[in-house]
Length: 262
Image 1 (cartoon, rainbow, N blue to C red):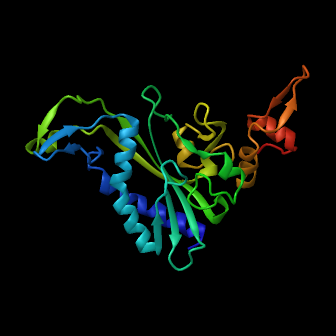
Image 2: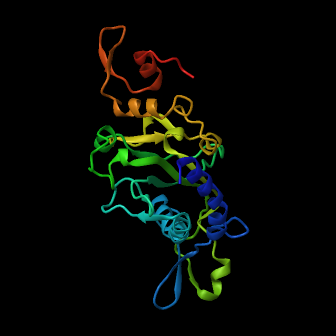
């Protein structure tokens, strides 16, 4: 299955996936967790908790989709390896697609924005496309790099509340109004690092631009995205005062490479 057909099939699958994980009233179907005495406990809306449980919730449906399309799904052999899912063709194991699962929440003050997320490292495995460090298969072996993402509204709940099974229908979900998307990674990338001191690529944050793949590299192309992030912080230029500074923004990079902005 070529990349274009794979993208088309996955985007069609998103509608079915949303029905599987969301109620008709747009709340998340997951309500909490249950112990051996059949007591229900509300979830926290902590982003790490939501992200992991969403991943677990979606996984059976993703496996079913992969099987229907003739792919095996390979999970990372170590924690924090890239990507979250490797789709490997059963007919041709050399055909692989990398999929990272990304979740984030809408900005409460400006619902056109989300909190953003990281798009993987621009470190060793990104610069050395044959490296196996912190990646399931060498970067060059993937025919496409994608994000399966969910943007949601957070709901404040009373985490101290306890429930029984008879209360199942009245337990509030900790997230609602889920928007699912499947996009190529480079098309939603920003030109700034995504987190603190780690070598992670940041995403854009305007939701409409994410959904329509209108990141800063979308028109420039994947080759320029790769070159920019492979050299992020490694190319030095001299400012008007004579001080050398590393390039860490797209405008300076394009001037250095002599590329006309799109």
